Every structure is written in C-alpha cells, then in structure tokens.
Image (cartoon, rainbow, N blue to C red; front, side):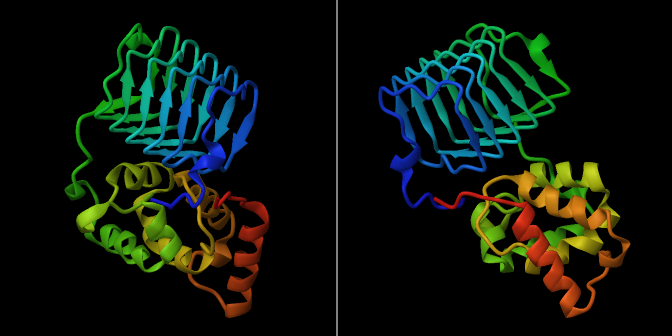
Amino acid sequence: MTRNSNPLRYSYISKDASKANFQNKNFNKTESYNSKFIETKFVNTSFVGSKFKFCNMSQAIFDDCLIQGALFRKCILSGARFNRCIIISTQFDRTKLRGCVIENSIVLSSPLGDGFSKNNLISTEVIQGYYPETGFSEELLHRAELLRNNQFINRSSVLHRKKGRLNTISLKWLADEFGESFLIQNLPLLESLVVKDFHTLSYLKVILHKLSLSDSVVQPGPLQHRKYLREHAETCLRTDAG
C-alpha cells in the first residue's frame, strides 16, 4: 500500500465536500466524520483502510477506485455508483445502499446490505477469495512477481500482496483486457516506466494501453526510445503522492 504521508489532508470532520472532484488521490488511512460528499466524484483514488462515519455520500461516483479494508459506518450511499472498482474486505456497517449501483467491478469479502439490491450488480462478480494462481501461466506469474523490484509498484500493493502472494484480482483484470501474451512481453517495461508513486490499477492500465498502440515497444527498444516513453508517461499520468 502506498503510504499516505499526511492522512489528515483528506480527512473531513463536519465539512461539506459535496460535488467535489477527487482525481488520482490517496485517501489511504483517512478518517472522515459527519461530513457531506453528496454528488462527489472520486476517480482513480485509493481508499485502503479509510474510515467514513456518519457521512452523507448519496449520489457519489467512484470510478476506477481501490477500496480495501475500508469502513463505511452509518453512512448514506443511496444512489451512489461504483464503476470499475475493486472492493476488498470492506464493511458497509448500517450504511444505506438503496439505489446504489456497482458496475464492472469486483467485490471480495465485502457484505452488502441495508437496502442494496442484487439487481444493481451489473457485470460485477462477488467472490469470497482471491482467484487461484493456477489460473495463470507460470511465465505471467513470474513476470508479475519480478515487478516487486520496482519500489513504486511494490509499494502500491496493486499487483502484490503480503507473504509473497500476488493480487490475482488485478492480474485477472489485466489478462482479460490485454491478454496473457501481451502482458508477458510488456510487463517488464513497467519496471523502467513507472517512476513515481501511484494508487490504483488504472495507472498501470493507461501505460499498457499506450504500449499496445505502438508496435515498436512490444520488445524493449533503444535507450533513447525508452526515455521518450518514460517522459511521455510522466506527462500524461498524474498521481497525488500526498
């Protein structure tokens, strides 16, 4: 998990952040209480160990977010939408979820209750455990494991878990979108292209999409070409390391 050097920065106590737009933010370990996030938009934002208590988050939108080990206690999430989110071991404790929609997402060990309708699970898989590594080729697993050598990828916990295990949810999303053969060829490039802290899988997906559009970078190219890719990624991809 990318460490949040200042969790108070995005901790809201009795404040109104309605209709705010949080993009590429690090809400890890933040604690918000009795605040309003009505119609607020969270994009490419990480909520690892985040706590929201007595907050009104109705009509909020979560796009491409990682929500892991989070707590929503006595909150209002009525009409909220989760799109392309990974939700892991998260508690919705006495939280109102009527009209809440979860689409194109993965929900792992996160019970949904208090008015949530299963009809609002759209193209979303609800699972109780990580996918087994046996579902992937040995070569892909090896390539993903080597990315631990990149301090930013390793620190993000997007691809890796504790005790030497891989995050097979993220790996499956990448394999479904790009195919194993493309990942085997191009994952090694991420080691030199990822040069700053990031918080969600979407950061890696953007880089891989750029690689998929250029045949010349399927295999590692000359140093000047790789320098160009690195600078291009820096220009197009913004994260908030705070």
